Amino acid sequence: MENHILWLNKNEVESLLDMKSTIRVVEEAFRQHGIKKVQMPPKLYLYFKNHNGDLRTMPAYLEEADITGVKIVNVHPDNPKKGLPTVMALVILNSTETGAPMAIMDGTHLTDMRTGAAGGVAVKYLARKNSKVVGFVGTGNQARTQLMGINEIIDIEEIRITSASEKSNINFKAEMEKKVDCDIVMKKSIQEVCDCDILVTTTPSREPIVMNEWIAEGTHLNAIGADAPGKEELDPAILKRARVVVDDIPQASHSGEVNVPISRGLLGVKEICCELGEVIAGKKKARMKDSDITVFDSTGLAIQDVATADMVYRKALKANIGIKLQQF
Image 1 (cartoon, helix red, strand yellow):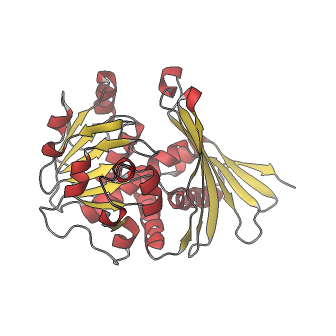
Image 2: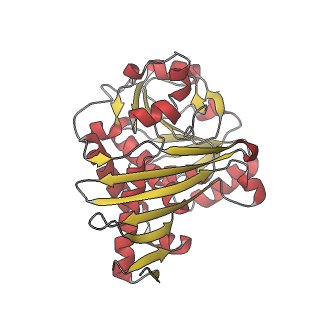
């Protein structure tokens, strides 16, 4: 196969990805991260201030699985006004034996799915076992896959949503009620949505929009939106009350939900409880009791992309899907 590179477009990747198997490979990638069996340099950022966007490169090597690759991904919050996704991505897989590129695939849907899977894994290990009500602040693509991921882990009884766009809320409700077996209730305020067992935030906010006094004891939060310096969605006082679990301490400290409180001296790196991989590997425990507030700070790791892309690649070979590009 090393004489060819397999190209997989967006539709092909979508046809090969389901949430259950994505959760399985993402959970294993986090476990390998927890036992220090991965190589993952920090994301590299290029900032386009004139266009309110950035471009990131994300390489990783999973040593136990012996798979490697890199994702190239943008974040441009103004893109929906232009009819384009906020996030677009490409993933390249390479042979660890020779370095030859083996596959190039669309990574846009893959990014949404692996992040949603990480949210599901976080709920599995951090949320209270009797959690039934899930709240969403933000109802874009990432909220959809977060719901898909959580729905694989718990039996949801009610979903409460709000966002800056009523149209987005209506579309989310209409689409996702077909995929989950429960009611989705639109709320007028973020405070109303915070009355839940699990809260998911998926906005591009650069200031706190979820206030400390709105969060009850026992709540678990998936903080997804902050993925670059200066972004934050949660009142720092929540982080001071909570047991904070991050996907990767160096990366989260730079660009996760904790980045602004850390940069302002409101939160110390040593106050972070642990990394999710350490919890999965059994090295650390995050939730100690039902009354604990837990926060998962998700920045998105290259190991998630490489593990998910490798699964897609193997499925594609088995199903004879994709176009083989001549390399040599």
